[in-house]
Length: 447
Image 1 (tube, helix red, strand yellow):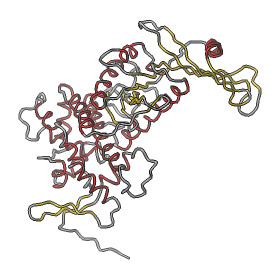
Image 2: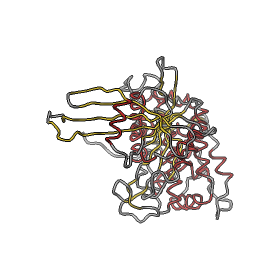
Image 3: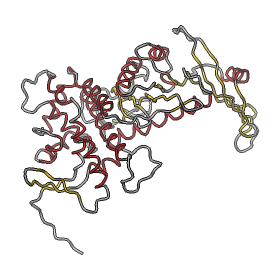
């Protein structure tokens, strides 16, 4: 069958899901707070700070990060109505306003504060891990880590060699709960050591996390953040949190740790020639008034997996600093679950398309990354709310989190017909659209 291609006078949108984002943003004070800020060099702007921010969030929530992507939406009436934007800026205006606001305004802190307040006030379910024999001790994970952004082949400010072996940036992120809501972010130059400024970042992340949930926090960090400064933050009264931080063994002897494990650990021979020791010791650390519990896992191999006898035993050592009193196996398993945050990194970098940041200016890219975290949270809320009932197509009861790309494809970029009747606007989705029931439920819930 050959189709006849014609234009229609009807208003049809391909991104009706932005109406959900508009309802969520309407629950915040983000727009009014941004309008109250003074941007150096900008007097009384023709296009408000609110319209600039909401327009860019509208792009990010469709997986678009480049400033030029705003041009097709300047004459899009639905885009403006869904996000309640007075005037959609041009690409140069959007770029220039962010350039001017980034270095000397409070936009970044306002974005993070409003994001945390939205998560709290909306009552999102921040899932904890439960410990103890009767699972009576809930802890909300606060995962913190660096994720290098590949910006090879560019001359942007701050781009330098990362530990991944490419040129780019090395931003640090903080995610809350098993759902991975973003609570903090900070853009860093690619060559920055992962611990530089991390103690301050950790303290701020804990404060933002406590705005979202009243449950105890469990900070999880990699060996690059094995620093007394981080332990001091976790033990301070105003930023108190339990922690599991992998220890950087540096030049510590594997043989010494094997001897310690044999004296203080429990041995399990998982196969012939492979002994696994797990246990814990209390150890003093310079700069701390109290000793720290060190959970260890030491593996001694005298026969490899193929049955070959080894002339010299292989010794593998992993040590974790923790404040938890639980069994070594529990602490180790909790730390391994920390690896889930790689999925959160991937969603921000690829699903929101912000790995190759759009500006040549470092401060502007830092502000863009803060907007990206807010957009990520908005989409995460949409995705998690869509799981609360079994009205979605191909619903799987084992799914605990809906990926951001899936949310964009199925709930944001939904085709719909926009009509007006009796001074009321209607958004009409296709009769056989499998996501109609979910979309209608979310719109009513958010409204």
